[in-house]
Image 1 (cartoon, rainbow, N blue to C red):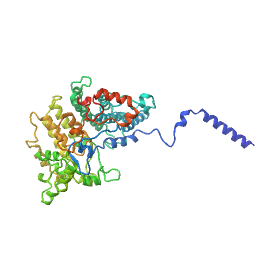
Image 2 (image 1 turned 180 degrees about the vertical axis):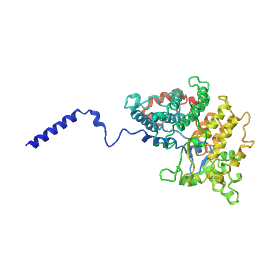
Image 3 (image 1 turned 30 degrees about the vertical axis):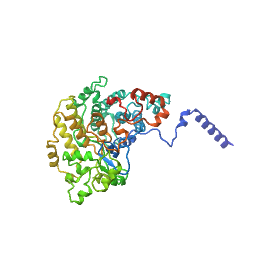
Length: 497
């Protein structure tokens, strides 16, 4: 009887104690952690953000041609795209965990990655949700959080520029060790270089708004460039913000062993002609000699051995030329080399071209030729696949000394943009498309009968269907204030006006 009595007391005490626990306690699933060290988020964020290698970007920028079917990307007939806010949500979660664990460096890296992602989103659409978009992650399930308003593109860029400055100013050794960093191994100075270099990219993308007093673009640009001690920048290719690949499962080059890349992708005719006209040896590592050139015994380093397909021509016309042995396929390394080359989010050559353009536009003082040739030299060093097998160091200097490569009065910006464009082959995502859209350089060929969209190059993507269904009022308001012709791919966003 005593044992039963004792058991009853214990049982009742247990009930009493459990009744004192708050309702929230029972909402936590012990098998699904809701808290983690911010370092556990970082590597995945980096891997997703810096994976920039895309054949679609090559098709849209007249570097590649697809021969299996009619690609809407190649023929400029695309329609809608997604927002990809899931990527930002991971960044916000890392920032929250950084605050919880008192590890502020992760919070400031979060400011960079959040800016990096939202810039990519607004470049595609124009106005998008931002200030209210992440409220639900803070357990705010109000109507504003579930159906966020669309921020004006100008306001988004202002927030981005302020956040990037805050990130660069605030990252420090005292902010704690950065663990699980697959890009810079926790080096704070390297991250500052990446953030400041990215800031210059963002500022140059706003060149049409250089007179905007709200954004103060030229002053911000000068503040960074004129103070390298406070705002360090990339100084070589070793600083590149990049993902390096390894011959290991899950870490190989993204198109390694891709059957489609082995058989369906060829160089674009206008791209081949550009490289041949400049006697640019990168042609030898971007493409392969045509089958007819191989049969004729031409060297892989003979410019006459290369020919492209016309991106705007119908698929049947390109297939006929390809079948006849008169087209250069993309270089075999992109499909057969598990390591190949890193995926660059932003690199030192691009920085040099940005600085050269800034001098040409009168934003900063400096040696434009030094920036321009430095950009080309380092771009060619990056693309020098297997060293002298591609082209020698002397070949690079010979290339730079050509009259056709040297900057000419009246065409400086055009030449800088052309070299920046060549540097983006199978790298840096859609950056060359955005730059061409901003400047008009280089000209993308559109004369063929395969063209969609009335023969025009789109300037944006239409908003996601999910937004129309779930956030209709706000997306409709955003469309009306931006695009008089409605939500179409030819609307001209604020950035381009």
